[in-house]
Amino acid sequence: MKITVIGTGYVGLVSGACFADVGNAVLCLDTDERKIELLNAGRIPIFEPGLDALVVHNMAAGRLMFTADYDTAVAHADLIFLCVGTPPEEDGSADLAHILSAVRNIGRRVQRPTILVNKSTVPVGTAERVKRVIEEELGARGAHIDFTVVSNPEFLKEGAAIENFMRPDRIVVGSDDPHATAIMRRLYAPFSRNHEKLVEMDVRSAELTKYGANAMLATRISFMNELANLAETLGADIEQVRRGIGSDPRIGPDYLYAGMGYGGSCFPKDVKALLKTSADHGQDLRILDAIEAVNASQRNILFKKIARFFKGADQLAGKTIALWGLSFKPNTDDVREAPSLALIGELFAANCRVQAYDPVAGIEARRVLLREHGEARCQTLFRMANSAAAAVEGADVLAIATEWKEFRSPDFSFLAAALRHRAIFDGRNLYDPQFVASFGLVYHGIGRAAPM
Ligand code: UGA
Image (tube, rainbow, N blue to C red; front, top):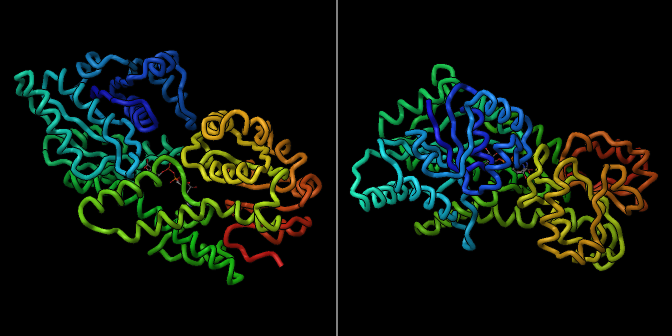
């Protein structure tokens, strides 16, 4: 099939490359000409395991192309995917500016019956809004062209996006048009034997499914974070509790890890957007309010523990904290809403120095920190180390904000010798507290029994 993909962010690029890989002719459009130049030179603007090889391979095979030109993009296919960002507005609602501008650009140019598939995360009712905009544009030039809008939300996880796309748990297709549904079935056949992964539904339900899924996962995380804080007070261990809870098949083992709160570009934004949608419709989703509030306070948890260890935030000035991990989770360079940045912000406010190391997110984190805290503050308080060991040199204590594999079994004897105050603050519960303690290190995890 011929497919056009609008937007070459995470979702667009991964979807485009995967659709091309199973034999479709895919043209991806982005209005950012520099990005298109990079992509045409075979350079991938984001870090995602396996993506660069997949893109380069399919470009070489002539199945994956990039353009910044809407005329070419709209003429290429009658199946057009919308994969543009929907960042949060001030009030939490999803900003549809990119969607609506893409849709106008399509509506102005389209010449033949077209299926517009929305993969961006959008509030319920957006498909109808998109349809109205297209009709307006068609009406303005007196054109009569059949148009269908399908909702096909994306459930990719950063860091595992290709695997998630190639072997999906489910493919949600929201469509009110049987012909469009049939085309979507054909398109997704290579990813779902006998169409068994396809979950067909109406458009509004598909739009709500995306928010419902992310809000449910965020709920589990916030619940476990609250339970972890209680476990700590009660002298119980949340890791043992997690295994006990997760082995119930009705609950399952995933998304039960207590930590520093959820981050990334999706959960925080989608929980806020769903809250806004419910408020707009006169309903108070109280549970979502609580999820948000718990997450906001959990982001400060490691700072609170460090401050308590030093007997007050005012005692932190002049101290040096080694920080392992900056990305919001492993296998990505994405630092959007990363708990590490919240921690660094608090440490800076206490005039505490940070020596950070991350396998891939260093450059991105530095860029954000410079923007948020300014050159002078970063110059005095922040240093990027080029290895986990180098970050620890001369530091008072170690904090861990991302569970990269290379942090999982460190040389504890080295840490005990290098850290002035011999303490580890583990925001990801990577270690066995007793094992760490056997090296003479003080260990503070999340929801682990307080050290005696
Ligand atoms: C999330 C969803 O998992 C995807 O299904 C969805 O497609 C995507 O949002 C999206 O809407 O586009 P992602 O943001 O890439 O994917 O990251 P996750 O792996 O789900 O992690 C989100 C956050 O939750 C991270 O900060 C992670 O550290 C945290 N988390 C996750 C926990 O604190 N505990 C857990 O048990 C699991």
